[in-house]
Length: 231
Image (cartoon, rainbow, N blue to C red; front, side, top):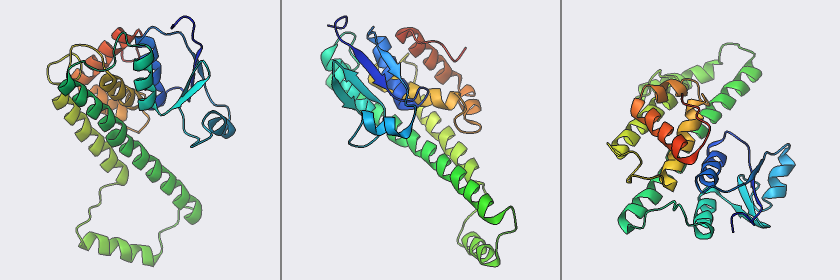
């Protein structure tokens, strides 16, 4: 079936959710074509309902959402599986994949908002001192228990905390909750991959300072046959 099907992955390369699906396709030994959007119109053309990518096309069937794509791939191409046959472990893997998508994505989105807000502020004020009204608001915020921590510093600190959580989840196993790759590992790897590429200032250093996670990434790259980026 794999040899007869035409599979196309639509999505920007080097974003976590596209990377997650790409790794799943590699892991299952499926031939596919990666097509990146050239314009905003491509997003809506490939996913008319939400305009969100990635979308996977299998013989004309369009499947949006990276998690739904992995589940569909497992139903069509069950070997090797992306979830354990053990019900308890399967649940843990599904929960961690969702955790990676939601919790780590929150920090990416937070960073984008901070970056865009800073850019807008510079454009409006031209680098001038904030007006007195803004200064009064800052003073009130400090009196209420705020700190002078830069917002981007808070994002980096939060990411470091989440990666420490991952170290606890991984423990001494080669992969999360199992001895073989699952969708949980692909989801976590995809987020670490983006951080390793420096998508947030300082994020690569955070990953590299946690050798067990770097080794985990290398094991996923070996298992899926992906080009190693962590060497």
